[in-house]
Amino acid sequence: MLQVKRLLCLGLILTLLTCESDSNDFTPDLGGTGTAGSLAKFTIVDDNLMVLKSDEIIQYAIETGGGLSKVRTLQFFNSNLETIFPYANNVLVGSNNGVHFLAFDSQGILELISTYSHLTACDPVVALNGIAYSTLRNSDCRFNSIEVLDIIDISDIENPQVVKSYESEAPYGLTINGENLFVCERGGLAMYDVSDPQNIILKGFMDFADELPLDVIHSRGSLILRTDNAIYNMSYTSSGVFTIQAQIQ
Image 1 (tube, rainbow, N blue to C red):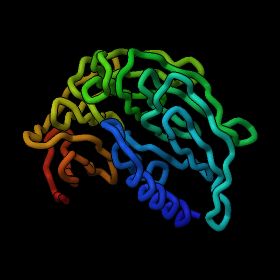
Image 2 (image 1 turned 60 degrees about the vertical axis):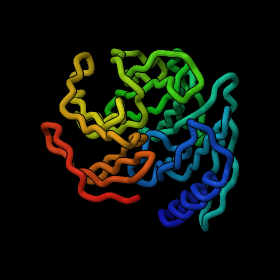
Image 3 (image 1 turned 135 degrees about the vertical axis):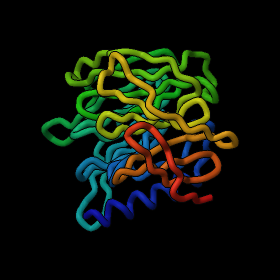
Image 4 (image 1 turned 90 degrees about the horizontal axis):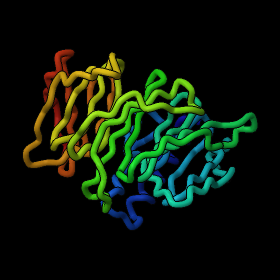
């Protein structure tokens, strides 16, 4: 079944890459099959495949042998869905006007549980240990809004509460590992200590003068960073020092 899931994701990547895109459409990562990027357009939770399509989420059941059967379509009016991220048995969806929190009911059907609304902006999201992290960016989003990093308490997923908002500049994707949050922002990669959500601390920053970091994935103690020009395999220290180990263009 795992091999089937990987093949399905590869097929979706090839399909999505041939579709018309705008400034918010990035190459999706293998969400749900490992460590997902925060700009993924689809994900897998157990034997369910969820795909974003403009203002709707389409849920498919992955059948034995690799077949797909459509379970349902969730429509989100007046909301442009941008990113999807698996969290435990929940699904977090970032949109241009909020973060939607979804869960599966007793029949395995995906349902909307709650929504955290904000001013219109691009909105990647990741989560860990009852806390969601979301960046809001207005550049290249055709909107006029603030740019911040929101920290949201989702311990009660039916009632998400903002812990604190931090100013940012041109933030894109992000990833979380333990107490370390990595954010593509300010034309580089930042590392924050988020052990205290009320007082996060910048531990390190690497500038990419001629490139724009778009998304980052934490995997096996390393970081995979995607820019508009290349992909980097990077290491980092606990004090926030980044080192480029390999580069693919």
